[in-house]
Length: 194
Image (cartoon, rainbow, N blue to C red; front, side, top):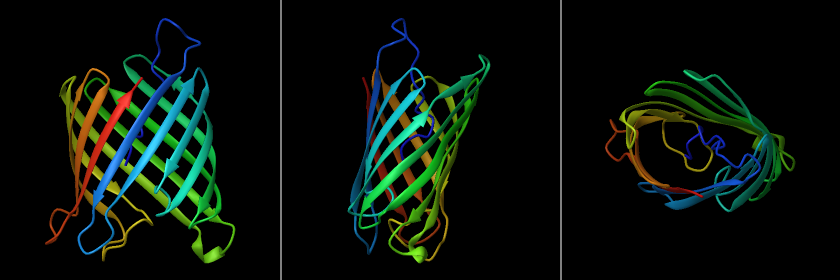
């Protein structure tokens, strides 16, 4: 569940590329545990993204998007995208990453609709909203939800919380989904920006 707020980092060299690699590891009780790598590249307005095991297991996707940003105190980042999905699921997917940040609070959501080109019944909507609070710049806590096709539980929407820390270019976040059931899903995320 890569952070939806991965907006391009403005710096002194406006034409430079900004990259982010995030790897999520899912521990799914009585299911298939897996990893989900996501690589993004941003340059000015251009957003490129490659994913694996995100839309479905043994499935990759390539994305093209446009970065919009506005505000200083209340910061809005929006990246509408379109992607091609291939593997266990084949299709076309419009999506959007959105974040709204005010001081130490951030609301972010990543969503997409996959139009399965091999079977209409295989089409689905994926969403991942989260709200976080950062009392200090290197620490954040928050609530998260997601609706995914990658694993199935008796709950249609997975809900839980997250705790994250960062140091220089690295981030580590732990997500606990469905914490009130006997065997919650644990997601461990490691990210690096360069």
